[in-house]
Image (cartoon, rainbow, N blue to C red):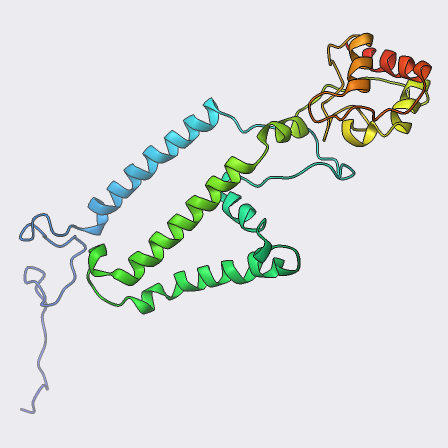
Length: 254
């Protein structure tokens, strides 16, 4: 009989085939504390930690909602925009002479590009399997330098920024009805008050004038003698015009 001719092969389900892949995680009990199965052990822990942070973030957003500012006005050249806190270090960097003005491309593109490029090259520069920072001087030095730079620039930006002026600029001011053709508004616009206090009295470099709580005499005194950042002697009109202007500003109180 020729080999294989007339032979039949019978399979038995009770006999396990060699090399068969069982859809079950490997038993890691012989390596206690060193490793664990990705599913479901490790992944479940990751999900639990992520859920805790997500719930905490949602509670924070409900308890402390994002602050709102007045509606954006593209005609207001006195408004100074400020980025969110996580970009303050870049905002501060662009204030320095070597990264602003004609060198703006250095601070806005070249320096961040070098930092991101160095971060992308870290896996190729550090090929050791050692995890201790003391045994990895190059990556550790880069990370410490990056952290120190970001911390310092953010700190300088927070300390040197005029947050009170920024709050006045972005404050939501209640709108008030007024007649742009009235004599008081014409004096207000002609005396350059509009440049600091806004065309709708919303403020800018100067304080908002809506609901200012000042009397006519107090307004006249401030116009003549100045107050805070407002210099004295800015109004060069007559006494009659000053009286009309003060009465008009006092009428903005509701």
